[in-house]
Image (cartoon, rainbow, N blue to C red):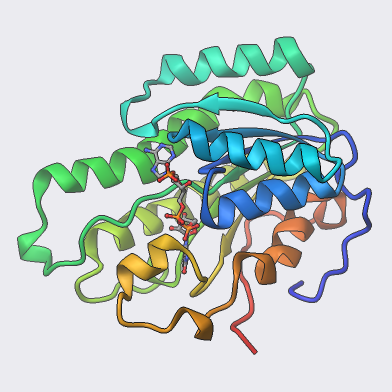
Length: 248
Ligand code: NDP
């Protein structure tokens, strides 16, 4: 579905939460969803970045987004429950979630993984995603059809030396997706993963500082897959982990 050509009104009036919406792939996804008619809820930890995405969406003629400033590292299940109640009060339902926020941590030999950093990466990449998903399910069940997209990585399917913490967090992401997809089969909720593959963002530059970014896809290049899985054309797709195509 990398060549998916989304109708301009694919997401008309759908309420979609994007985590890590201030930068990189998440910022592009929020702008792209808004350009296809969605009302986006922009969640992230740096308010100025969320405001910039908000401005871009409004200037482009998109529906006014909502901003949720939240550092996933410090958030607890009760934060997510309050957020869900606010979403239900304001919009009545939630049509989609893109779980995109993640941190990389430092690449190191497994034996040298720092315990505190392990906990931080698991807190942001796994626990936050799990608690948020649990809390959001009642709002997602109020939608006619809801799509939940998790963000995986190739190291979440096959372990790689020195990528221990991040890789394990992405294996967990695949596991969460598969479990939920199985629990909700034949229901109105579907759960899938996207593996963006090497994409020109700050995280990629942190992982591969010597790489020429011009050799990489941009976040914009990979949006067809993000649109496909969020919109109703993927209504039958559940429990899949799909790759964005490599740069041509
Ligand atoms: P970026 O680092 O560019 O963006 C990550 C976003 O997540 C930022 O907006 C960041 O906020 C936000 N974020 C990080 N920590 C928190 C937190 N504690 N609370 C709230 N928000 C937070 O990453 P990418 O765009 O590259 O990555 C997006 C997703 O794609 C990630 O899940 C990543 O693992 C995955 N991925 C990326 C690949 C790539 O090549 N780029 C390849 C494979 C997977 P802030 O801006 O404030 O830092």
